[in-house]
Length: 163
Image (cartoon, rainbow, N blue to C red; front, side):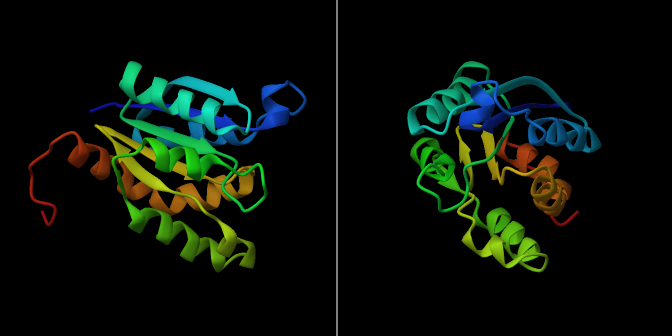
């Protein structure tokens, strides 16, 4: 099964062409390790409405299996990605977000202020990652081995998990 994925970079400056996005391409590269196909990529400003619109487009219109966002997961006033994600998901997958924070906090205490969310909308898994390429690599590496299995289960795979 090819995982159909999309990447959304959340950045005011990036959406205005004032900053090169280095995190989005890092996600695309890493998703190749699990045979995910990324044909949908967007840079949006740090506003709840624009983030929600992109998430809804990728999940409801494009029917992607996996959406990974980068940026806007901290505690600054413009860090709104988790808020937009919570507004569109049907249920959370807290273990993935907890695992990312746990492992990242071994590297930097700044991980403790991450508000990243992982959740499901219909049959789409949505993952929030921090905005820096280094943080993307560190956090995505933690959950990458579980992504394929999670997507398969969300799509209705009834095989036993313990096999």
